[in-house]
Amino acid sequence: MLPPRTDFPDRFVFGAATSAYQIEGSAQGGAGLSHWDTFAATPGNIMDDSNGSRACDHLNRWPEDLDLIRDAGFDAYRFSTSWARVMPDGVNVNAEGLDFYDRLVDGMLDRGLRPFLTYHHWDLPAALSAQGGWQNRDIPARFADLCVTVNARIGDRVESAATLNEPWCIAWLSHFLGAHAPGLRDIRAASRAMHHVLLAHGTAIRALRAEGATNLGIVLNFETSQPADNSPAAERAAETQDAIYNQWFIRALMGQGYPEAALEGIGPHLPQGWQQDMDLIAQPLDWLGVNYYTRRLYTGNDGLWPQAAEVPGPLPKTQMDWEIRPEGLTEFLTRLARDHTGSLPLYVTENGMALAAGADIADDARRVQFIADHLRATKAAMDRGVDVRGFFYWSLLDNYEWGWGYGPRFGLVHVDYDTMARTPKASWHAFRSMLGG
Ligand code: FCB
Image 1 (cartoon, helix red, strand yellow):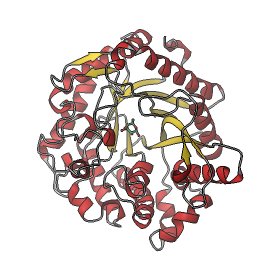
Image 2 (cartoon, rainbow, N blue to C red):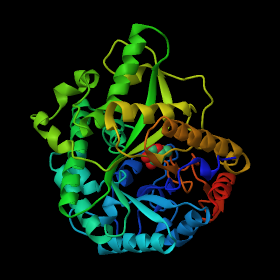
Image 3 (cartoon, helix red, strand yellow):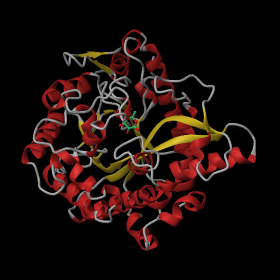
Image 4 (cartoon, protein in one colour):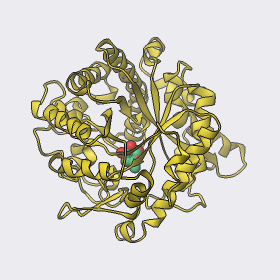
């Protein structure tokens, strides 16, 4: 059972989250190719060789999907706009794309759902990727252009907007670890992306404010990073990982500068004159989104980079092999408020677990337990004085889990990828009982 809603303040927002490429169907509606389409078209990148061309066919089935959010009793829906749908070639606007988001936002309001927009959740137009994408110093201006264009169409009706989802994934996972589009493993590309993604955020915030947009934030991911043993080398590896993953972005955003432990490896490869960008990056924010899923353990290694030293941990795991550790969420929320964000409102913008097909419907009690534990972990941070304003479950639907393809099932609602039928799982019903849908 989930905790009663009355455990949370009246104005606390409960929502479900998705992202464009993972559900819409990228081949329809006049969208251009994104670098996820081209990454997925390259053999060996996606576990089941699938792509998001059809995904959950949300582009056509969105009314039913919004009904499912409303019927569970959620207050809000966190969704993203697809850059390649809005600007197929990265420059010119696809009117059909903007029309879609316009209808979608009206559909939310018709159902009493509060729209929480994310401007970019990874589907960069392939045309921009071909010009260097996040490595290119032009990308902040291009991104600000996207935000201003989308804001001009739907900004009057969205309650809140995040510039970017998970810059660590956009930059590091994609340009250093090679696991996400564009699949590079290059320290120069990665370092430039680590900086430009933040510069893009700052540039977009400034441009949006000039347009009168309000309630602006960004969504970061956090992952507990701990030493696997008590050797100094393991401690160093965990600290470096923490610096790159958990501190790089929030420190820069809060005007605290890049962390020393990360600069050691990244600094030599940053674009020249990066120090002059730090003020623009540290634009005032109205809120911060926190995505939290797991922790990782590191032994020592000789090199600069901790990833090489990751070892499996002993805790129970999800289908992704991610350890389940709810207290990490309490720790991050309290640490953020203490060390970085002060009184800035926080939202848990993503938290959830994947279960394998079959188990996902039959054995959904595990997901209900996972959600209950993480809601309590959120509440524990609030009891310590942290201003957490909402919790969004990832994800409304089973969907395209990036490099993992369609195997992992994160949804509150099961999707049959042959018929596209939606079937609410026990976790959806648990939210419905909790929220009175
Ligand atoms: C997050 C992403 C989201 C989804 C979940 C499982 O990193 O923001 O798109 O892939 O993980």
